[in-house]
Image (cartoon, rainbow, N blue to C red; front, side, top):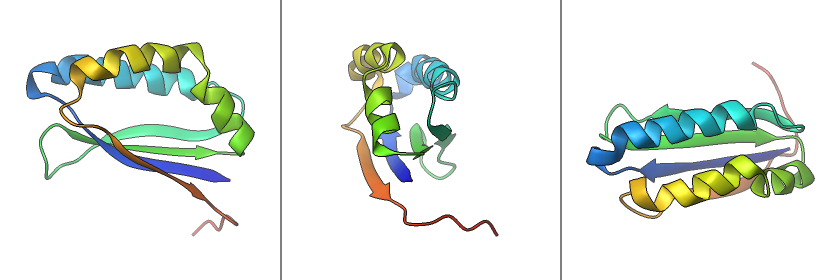
Length: 99
């Protein structure tokens, strides 16, 4: 299992555009084979800061996602809406325990 997590800081004047882009990305990505979860969350302590949190079945599923049409669209939208480079990390999980 692969977990991707990070933060994205958006320009205040591009907030609505960023939310629209993230919403579309989330909706399309959740339809992908191998996607367990793909969500954006807004940081309640830092204005215009979002957390992206993804869970993938495998590295292959994540690689396919990176080549998807909706990811290509997001890549063209990001430079216009982000205030700083996204800070995103990938983790490999050995097992999954539900609480």
